[in-house]
Image (cartoon, rainbow, N blue to C red; front, side, top):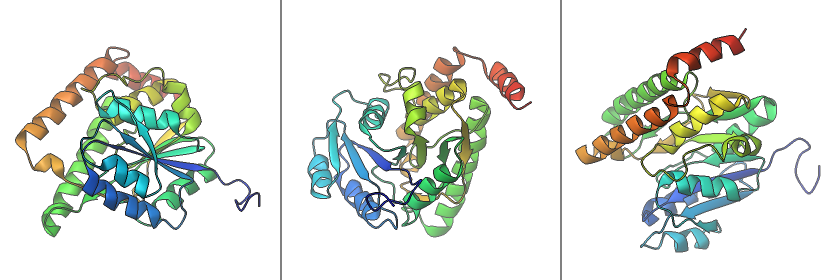
Length: 253
C-alpha cells in the first residue's frame, strides 16, 4: 500500500462534458458519488452553459474546466487534457453509471496492460420499460457493428468509455477537436485505430443508463446522422475503410 492505494492500482479521472444540463448533471454526479471505487477526480467541462451547470458541479466537489469553444469534441478533449489520472473515464451529463462502473473499468485496465480503451452498452432509462429494452438493444447493436465496420475495430460510445491517459496523449493532436460537427467518440475511435496504441474492446458488462434523447425529435436524429456522415468523410479521407481492414488483418497475423 502507498498512501492508502493498493500496489498496482491505477488513478482514475472521470470527465463529464456539459452544456445547459444542470438537472441531469446533478443526478449523474450523485451516481458518481456512490461508486464502490471512487474516482480520484471528477472533471466537469462547462461548454459555456447559461444555466447553473458549473455551480452544480462545484457544489458536488467536481473540478470545473471551462471550454468556450462550443461542441462536444472541444469539451471532451479539454477534459481529457486536464485529467491527471492514469485512466480517463468519460460519460455524459445524462449518463447514470451504476455503483461498480469505475471499479469495473479500472479493473480491466489494471488486469490488461495492452488495453488502450474500452466501451460498453447502455439502457435508455427515460423510455417505457419494454420500448427502452428494444430501443437500447437495437441502438447498441447498430452502433457497435455499424460504426465498428466503419472503424475496422471497436467504436467507442461517448456515454460510456474509458481510455488510458497515454493513449489519449498519442492522438490528442490528431482528433478533430475544433469541429463541432463531428461525433467525438467515433472520431477518437478512428484515431486510436491508426495510432496502434493497444487494444480497444467492447465490454457488455460495462453498462450504464442513458437518456434516449435521440428518439424525442426528428431534427435531433437528422443532426446526428449528418454528424456521422461528416465524421466518416473526414476520417476515411485519411485512410479508406477497405485499407483499414487490410491493416487490421496484417496486424493480427
